[in-house]
Image (cartoon, rainbow over all chains, first blue to last red; front, side, top):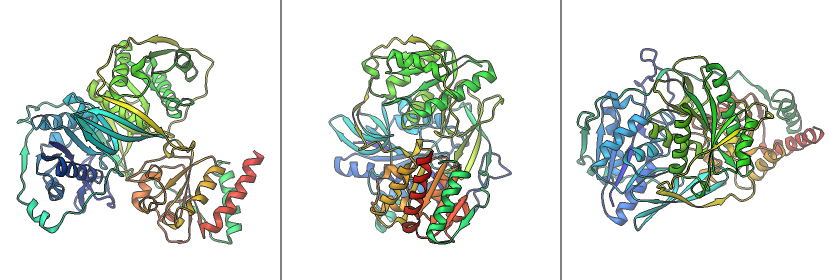
Length: 257
Length: 324
């Protein structure tokens, strides 16, 4: 079974990100450490797990600048066969619907039965990619999977909504976004890391995909820091006294009781 | 500007709170721009559809039939797009609930629209429509101009205020339902045990971290949450230790929440956790470590042993709750 895995390189989760005054809508990148989008790790693991069992190839598809190769190499070390990288600035800077259209065009020829991606891109906080790619490939999608079972031309996927778990049956091919809880991503072995260096990362351009005119649907005009929180009240007396003060604050200041 | 269409999401007990919030945003936008406003609802009874008048809608498009008994991205997006075409809508609003996020994605792709998910603010009066949404795990806010002709917005629950209900019945227009080609179908919904409130829609969240010590410690958290009629949250450390289900996790790899009050108990407040709850209106922290990062961010900090403080706090609050 062939599986496409959508990848993104993002700033490390512990990174402090700052707006770049010189480039409105962008962050300062000079000191940043980048990693594979944390939710993509579940997608990569699931793809490798399924292809190990059922055969077929798992191939990565990524939109991002040149530096994205480092994150892609990590996914190749875990077990993706090869990867495709699109570095055109127009693609890198595009909104999620446009990026989904581009990825769909790149994935189409590979004709996978399953398309996996992370639940959310932790840089742009977009969680729509699986649905958008599915739309442009005219296939169904399921978001936020915590369980995927593929059998006989269909996938049974479990996702959580408020107050319930939904069990969804989808015809293949299907695009699924992956949540924490789906699996335990493995750490690649040294030998796999060495081997991954010879795996192919193919560059693809928007021109090659026949997608040269992509008007921007939306544009981040400014990135700003959230308002700083004022310094709080601190109590450290006897538990009974502190609890009493807290109860009073909850009632008089926060007004929640 | 064309019309404004709000997707009304139903729940077991009527309309979701997030729908009431989206209705209020729709009303304000309609008032400011003079654009017509309507709602679309799927799988609701005609009475429930007409009842949307109470949220301020005079017109409601209703899709009913077997295809709408359970949520499906394909049938629901088709119905919302159909209603949008009928009224000439170019702005589509919904709550950023689990299904709202799914629908907004399908709809935006189908309409080739600008998509803004988890919106926390709108720059009223700007053209083109300009919204603010948290990015980089809420470490930054992105002021985003939605230039495309059609715009799909999902609004973060608990951020926008729902308006007062009105004495009004909406005119209901049924949508003809052609047999949609549904390729992803909900087989069954496994309801959570009890009526545990989800953190994303809760006004009050009491959350536990490593300092809670284990599943037993979460009973203290749940007790306090119950007294405050709030939801139970957790840090990644507590979830990874297996003390509580992932459903409850708040933070970068969990859920982003914006309650009125967030009480962090035994949570150090790493940047990844703060990312998920930093937009709470009030933050209270209970922690033994006076230097824990959460103590720098909280509005009210109790330096002390949560096992001693929480039971007393619960009793104090129970008294107040009772007298109210």
